[in-house]
Length: 322
Image (tube, rainbow, N blue to C red):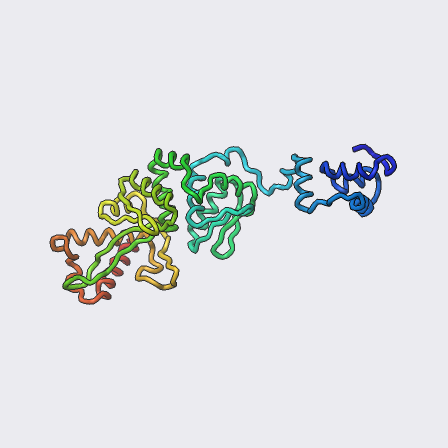
């Protein structure tokens, strides 16, 4: 806008130019007056002054090239592609992550998983995360917008499922992410007619999303692992599927059993991977020492529950050391 004077611009022109997106600073520089005088002129002429947020939007709309100067991170075209790393990041966020308007965060008590989240962010977007207690996060509108387009909290997107079913290796890695974050191993000790022994053995992946539970069953089936839908997740309970899960998926080393009640459960703070190996060992012991597969021979003299648990813990210590 060329230099002008108050006499050359009428009061209605001030309002018109202001409504077109010009700021008070731009108007007062054009006519050579103070900021407060121009503001008072607009108010007397009946103009509704913009809020700070509206002023920012107006400025960006008139000067779109300024937007890059205000962005903390600029996403490259390669980072916007649906790579294998981004699939892992999306499903990690599904389990215990959250995508806000300008923030992406992952919450977990395991430092191993938080470091994995940081590594994925660095590899995909070339950004560094911050950690506060058990929360690792990044503040970025652009990154949040890019991840939000996949709507990961509703279901695993079709394009992601297609890529997973085409790649057994990627499927194994993704299922391990679910196992590390939401998976649990159960080895139950129960009273038999004559003694205490191991009865229920299963792996569960917690999930309340009905669609995602069905998708997890499909992914497991592609690896010849039979699973069924439970009320709060996906369950694997037959011996063949448990062995296949242990061999193909498993748990990452160092991931421990964490309960909502601190100290609750006989496997609290034990490594999930070692507990899974222990579960498989109970089947092996049954084959070598059992009587027609009905009871574990090594437990036939266990008249108390703690005797069975003592044997299981000794096996766990051996397996963990190995």
